[in-house]
Length: 199
Image (cartoon, rainbow, N blue to C red; front, side, top):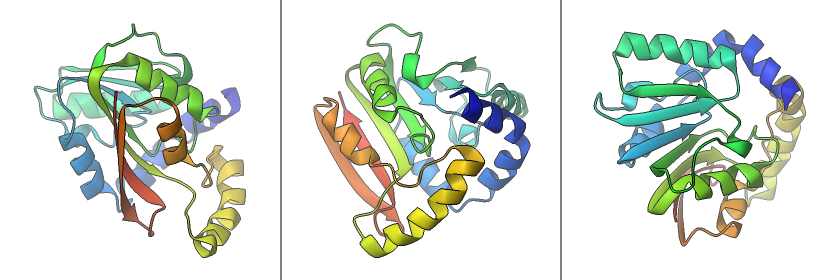
């Protein structure tokens, strides 16, 4: 955890530059538009999604990297999002009471969480009954040919950022106890998926 955390802090500005140029903005905007009420964004990073929030949104964003949060704070000031609060926090052990949030957002986070099941269980815990978690995540494909490519790339990403391209995130979400889970394939057949999980 500490090793991955320090890598993201050291590379925060590079990561932010890359993040701004990824072909995911339309899908991230769609995901943010599904949120309502009291919102938690886990792994908010450098704040790539901040530009999609309405100015009256009630948002708490957490991340384990101080370097990433510093960039996100600059974006909050630029966008004048006075009601967005940032906290340095580990998704696997969140300091929020049970049933705190109406919505939780995760975009491209669970490729990096060391113990993803623990993080997803924490999301379930802090959601209010009837609340929804929105996951826009990339993961292992059902296609063996795509997975050959992912396995090759995974050698690079795990060493560089501690990021796995072979997680089975949807399977984990379905296993932890949400009352309803729906999934939509977004990119690269089923590598990138939009998953909506209701408590």
